[in-house]
Length: 250
Image 1 (tube, rainbow, N blue to C red):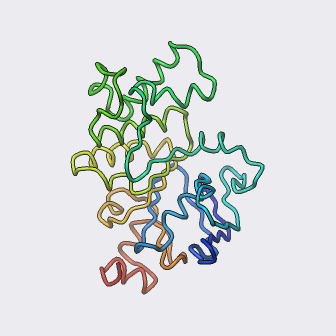
Image 2: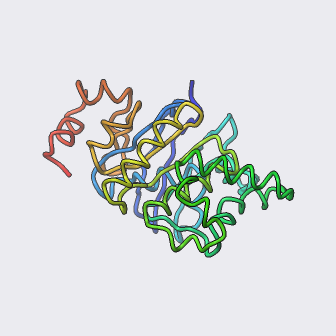
């Protein structure tokens, strides 16, 4: 079953074509990893899935990205509701300049949750889901910026979960973390995949092998190959895929 369907998606920056007619279905309830050399369009593809591409000056987008059958690139789409549906983890954690509690409660408040009891429940549930509760329960009202970088990234994950998204998008979400923190984030993503459609950009093939159920390989803005990760890693069809997985191109 496909949660996200991308059809003939092209993106250019000031005349430079970054994505060239991408069409692919991203399966529901799995981890999909987008891999490929630097500059091949991985992050551009990810940013189209929640309209962050709109923030890039000079970007021109054509084609469609369907989530639950709705083309999210249509100008009439409510961006606030779209971002509620699609949580996002950046390369580096960006906690809001407020307390740990208020970081997690921020989204639910925007979407109308006023009850302190309800907010308390959401904050605790989401911090437990990211294995942060026991680490921060005694400092919920202290600045989030005082947490370690690894804790901040898990806090950003908790903040994303607080608005009950359907999709989690991650742009190399462990690249700024130490190995232990990266392992913690990877573990949580694997645990969450049954409840969410997870799409990750990664430049680490070992990470893709550990996490991915499905694989998308991009090269110079083109979709070269996609399919079940185990099959592509063991029997890639395309020579470019074989060369990339073999370390011949990077």
